[in-house]
Image (cartoon, rainbow, N blue to C red):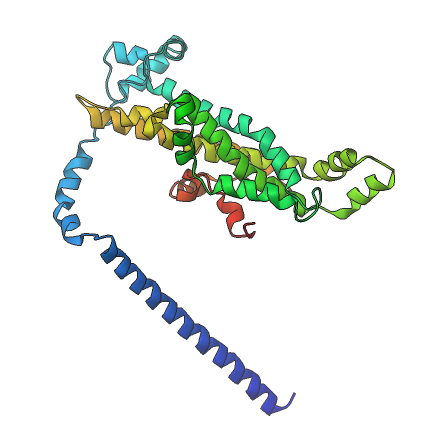
Length: 338
């Protein structure tokens, strides 16, 4: 290679770097300008924020010490406060927990269990339709453009958050646990169905052709040639959506649909903030526990995964708003929406 060619290549590389740098600076400036005028448009008041910082610190101090008096009916009836309520409840295991689950009275363990049930039942109810729509949405099963009828339906469902679905179902069943289950189930159809469709688009042709060459019916080709390749991934994605649905169930409780979210929202009276803080601690415990267990199970099911997420990764994911809204962040960046 001649020296002139090398110089030309170096000049080309340097121009590319310069262009990237200029583009990066312009992008940062554009984001900054958009942020500034966006704050102006919504009338964000920095002055009020700074003035109220001291009041905010006083407000946060009202959450301490955390009061677990409502942990079980045993601690509630005996007015055992603070973390002593948790210790006393476990000291009276299992009676303290059985009585709390059996009663309709409010307790932290009961409302936490209701939240888990909302996420679980919504996932179970939504799974059959998610499976059907997911299979029919694949071009390998339904020819183009008919498959986009199912893809479009799933996209339409995903475009509406579960928080809105619960209000859509309100005239039918009210804003209660029943409405929460329907909202979570509907949300599951869109999110889980799309994941199923994406998995089917990535399977190998070999097993499909092998099954088809035996003279198998179309349903047999789908079952043994396609679904057999993705069955473990389907289970893993269902567990992942269950994680998201538990978070969604907590949010739905805030608007009155039951569970731990409803407990937090309903706190009034003496030590209300301290008991609310106990509810927030339970939310943290529920989300982290479900994600750790689900992550370990999915790591054993999904091909190519050699280990589940650790505690640090789960804690970092608590700030991911997309999961609280039912959006799938793991697929969001790797596939285009239909």
